[in-house]
Length: 158
Image (cartoon, rainbow, N blue to C red; front, side, top):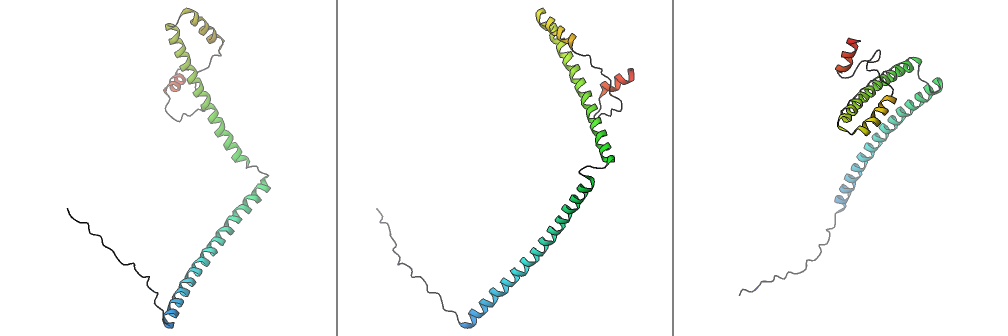
């Protein structure tokens, strides 16, 4: 059986800081002072840039406030017309999409009528008779964002 070795070390005495000579202290102080001056110059330049940016931002807010007061919150009539035409186009496209969904729903209902019981088909047919008929032609001025063969075929026939 081997004996375990235990190493006992003497506690280390804290080293006393060595005393600096006056010349060494002066050099360290001068280096610290120069470093502090560099930091202060850098900080001063950054504050100057920040001040310039805030001035520019304030100018933007002043211009927008002046324009708002002149126009009383309204945009020009040309822009209003442009927005209205875009909204009308979007509305027409929405109508065309809803018509397509209604047609799909009618096809699904008709395919379900074949497979369901006669009592349910009478309810469905009564609902279908009460629904308004939707036209399947594309609205005037409609420009689809994707190719839609259904509207092209219908407009060619009609």
